[in-house]
Length: 444
Image (tube, rainbow, N blue to C red; front, side):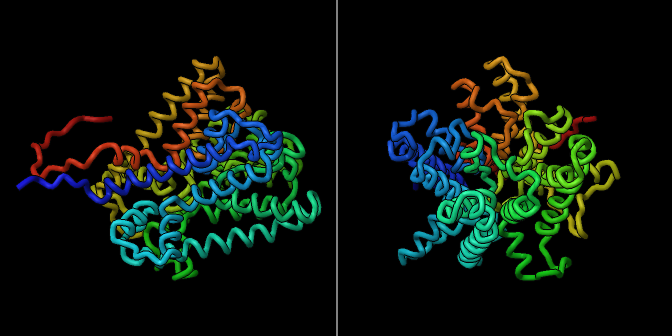
């Protein structure tokens, strides 16, 4: 009898997730090449449409063509569709389409959905998907309604609807694409840097999209009863709060100390929130001091939360590594958090993710610096932005050469799909029942 060579479900899931994003990206790139997609009705080169499609599908926000001035309404609609699908995940959209068509959702499809959104179990995955779709629609429409009065005043009644919807979806999906190029190309949200209302709405949309659907599911179920939350939710909320407040204080005292009080507070908070994968900016980042730029790079690499629209290493990964280090310093055998013990395999996975992200970040940053003869700090900022799917830039994206753009495209794809997902998709599981003898190695 022949040995069954069928790959494990999880292995197939990771391949399907990767393939789904590739198909989405190529479809978007080809549609953006159509003359109707550009304002000039000319064919946009494939290298530019591919970069744009990857950036939109991977909810990054780095662009080589200004979204407002280069792309027509049709092209902008394609970009927004890519952002929406990329933010929610191709498997989520596929499952929604399958349900609407009346087809039965098989166990393998449910398993792929579990892997796609990092759900703790397959059970209840359909109700969770319904919750994701419903929550996304409510939050994005609410954001559009809140933004509309501002764009109605500045853009007009009809265009204002499109601008409000576009920026609400872009913010919630942590994409960072904007249509503010009508005022000044590549200006992002700098025109609203002193607008408390716009800043607040955008930050709330970014945060709600970045903390993850599983977190919102827990909050909806248990509301203010923090003790009943899953450990994942507790870690996400505490870590996210610290990663907003502490960097904001640093920016407040180190970067924007010379600005008026209102702008100082708004800029500090907004850059702290947007750095972890959102992509908008309300201040000119090209003038940012190097220490602050490096802090933003670290925040971009950390990213958002698992099962969210954001990319990066994820807040829970950083929290686990911090707790692991703390347990070593305190000479404790177990890694503990909120009266729970964290399994060792989670620690190993977190360490592998950190090693992979730092290796990609440093090697590609050095490569881009050598290829285009640019300062290393700016190049590391750019590769950190791509890998963390943050989308903010110090202004060098459009001036980079094709090899550097290819590097950024690979990083954006890896950052959104997930480095481990790509590795799991490429290599089949080969776990053995037997274990080799153990021997210690001295470290530190």
